[in-house]
Image 1 (tube, rainbow, N blue to C red):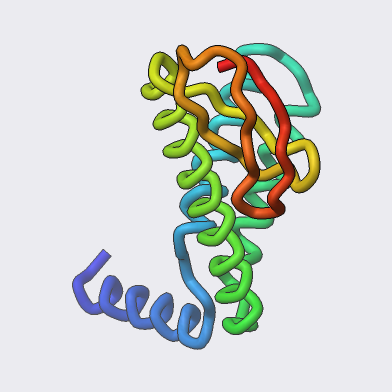
Image 2: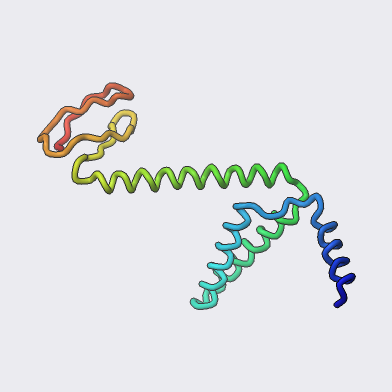
Length: 139
């Protein structure tokens, strides 16, 4: 292949991708998921994993080649929102685990607000700051 042909192919690809969405974080995540499913299907010989991996891969390419940029941006925004919510939940669980020797965690029976109570105080009356419900628990 000559240099002029390579430039020509590069230019054709650039023109083809013009106005298309391209890749984003959701597409990268879908790529990893599809690869994991396909490798898992290879080792376990479970056909449903293969078809799921293939479907995720097709969805990834559909998103990448789509011209509906606003819809793909909205999907990526929802993905980031879910990812941030999961990260916050994970941080909260880690903090709870690290503080497990200092605090008990209870839920308010009325509004289900999570409450942190110091350990080693015996039976105490807990007041929910959100709804004002009082209940007795052992700390």
